[in-house]
Image (cartoon, rainbow, N blue to C red; front, side, top):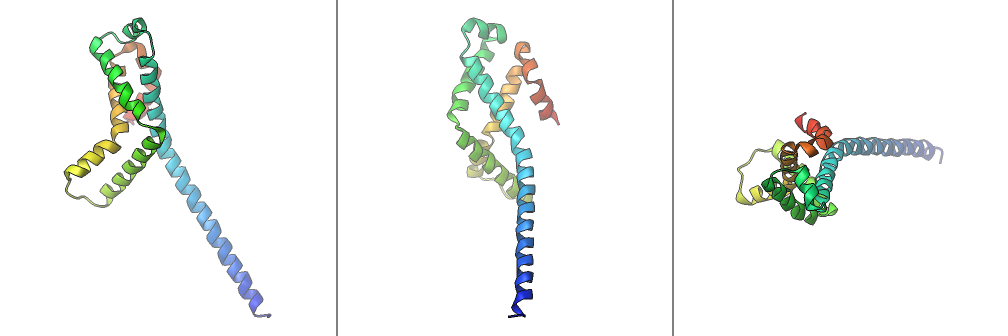
Amino acid sequence: MYHMEPLTKVYMGYRDGISAGKEASAQEGFNIGFKQSASSGYKWGIVRGITSAFVNLPDQFKEKLVKKLEDRCTFQSLYKPVQEISTDDALRMYHFQLQQENKQSHQRSKATVSSAIEDFDCNKLDFFFKELMLLVSESSEIKASVDVVKGEEEE
C-alpha cells in the first residue's frame, strides 16, 4: 500500500494540472470570442434599433430626419428583412461567418455558386450594417448618433 500512495498523489497532481490548463484555455478562448462578437452584436443592435425606430415614427418626423424620399423608402425597406432575422439566426450567421473565415485562411479554394450564396447569407449582418451606415451618412440629422460605430468600422 505504501507504493500506491505516491502514485495517487502524482495522479492527483496531473489531474489538477490538466483541469487548470483547461480552465485557462477556456477563459482565453472566451475572452477572444467575446471581444470579436461584442462589436458585431453592437452593430447588429444599432441596425435593428435604428430601423425599428425609423419605421415607427410618424411621416412628418421621417421627412425631417431623412430629406430624400428615395432614402426614406430604403430605410423602410431595410426594416422587414432585418426584423425577420431572429437573435438565434443572427448568432448562427455570425458563427458560420467565423467558420468561413477560418476555412478561407487555411485554404484558398475555387469559389462555387453554393459557397457564394452561403457567403451572402452569413454576410447579411455586415451588408445591413453597411447599408444603414451609407443611409445615415447621407442624413445629417441621424449621423451624430452613430459616429462612434462609424469610427470603429474605419479601424
